[in-house]
Image (cartoon, rainbow, N blue to C red):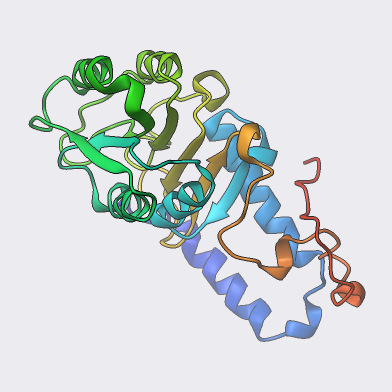
Length: 241
């Protein structure tokens, strides 16, 4: 993890002081900071703020994607050998639930993962429904060529899920250009954030999908506290920032 900036101390103190006077918190305060954070994350990811959701962990992002991706019986999910567990366990569960197969591209972490993935796709492409890979391998720093992998995935009709935890903030990346289906990053590494603050990119292709949980604050009109029990079927959209 990266060291916390010293500004964290003042921010934390201010937050605790505000909690001592909850009557000073307005409905708008429930949204302003989170929307600001989402906008800043979108700048780093080079995507629209409307495509970014705040999530507590990489595994939460994996579970959200798994709920929406149409993986079918007999299809394959591909990840890397010795991949970080958060980008493995959720796909393992999905494969078992759907009757699919989770395969790991073999090899030591220091190998050329890009070529290994391309060879694997050449052999298994017709059955591959999803590539769930990192930008940078978590234990060695080996970097993958995402544009080449993206093109190969599209050729075979496979979805692309990216774990950007090891690179986002340290390496430039444009999700608008790479256009993955989903991408997630924990914020406590190169984004210098605290634990339990991560960011999930969701392609416009999936933004009308099913959320992992039904939270009141993400519903349309949630900023009007006087109407919270006027239950809404629609979800709120990111405002212009």
